[in-house]
Image 1 (spheres, rainbow, N blue to C red):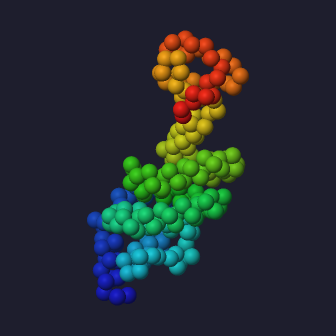
Image 2 (image 1 turned 180 degrees about the horizontal axis):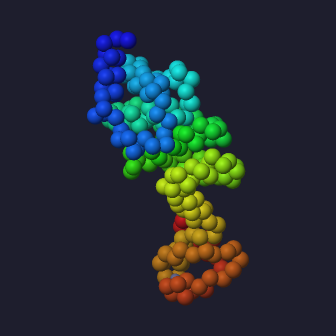
Image 3 (image 1 turned 180 degrees about the vertical axis):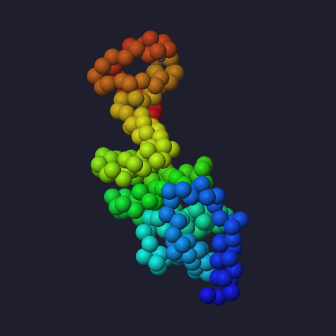
Length: 206
Ligand SMILES: [Zn+2]
């Protein structure tokens, strides 16, 4: 270890720089993970990149690097960790360590920080049916109600935005906009001027 590394390690290990204990509950707090994460941070300072050299779960590892980068306000490292995390969960969501990664994200990343939360919520939403067959995932939903709530909220808003038929049209008779669910081939009365038409498709804006 170089003196620099020793310095960083001592900073990281100083009690004042550690997260409060309750924030860690349920999270794997393995010392070797901490070491590898600290090493990644130091490596990044010199090479603007880092690798998971310890064979730790890539998803968990990158989530922890992200959290550490946030604590030390290293925006570039945070960005890189997010990209690596995204790539890792896209292929790794079916593995058990995805659950650990979600746990890390919801226990250790800052409360209002949507960075990793949106990623795990998105992947979970896309693969919800398969994930729900996993008892571990079910348990995680009970243990992390915020995670469960985020999945529901994201699912509903996704459904609403992709709902077929709800669009905005500009009425050619009065010039006002209306947001309606209009089916091709049916009549619809403009809510502003009561014009009755079935050619709304020509006047669609959004
Ligand atoms: Zn009208």
